[in-house]
Every structure is written in C-alpha cells, then in structure tokens.
Image (cartoon, rainbow, N blue to C red; front, side, top):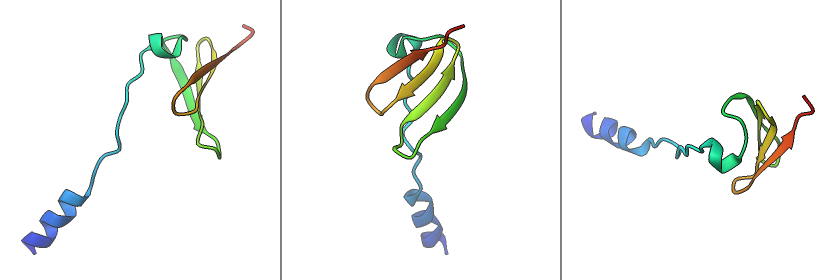
Length: 65
C-alpha cells in the first residue's frame, strides 16, 4: 500500500508557470478576464485593450477608450 501511494504521488506534476511582466507584453498592469480559443491562443482583457498571446508573441489590440 505504501509503495503504491508513493508511486501515485511522484507521478503528479504541476504545469509550468511563467510570470510575464508588463514590460514584456507592453500593456497595462491589470488583466480583467482570460479566455482561450480553439487554436490555443490566449486572450486577456487588459486596461489598455485586448492582449493576444500565441505562446511566443504578444499582440495588443488597443481599445478606443
């Protein structure tokens, strides 16, 4: 029983977490909502507009207000 439990615990891994500063994505400091599309692009509602992230490149679509 102990061997099985230790195998199960060692098999679980956390996904990698990457922190991006506002200097990297060149937008405001607050993100309000996050969504992902079918192509796995990530979208962030930011103070400066809509941020799009494809896994390597950030694109800011500025909001008119």
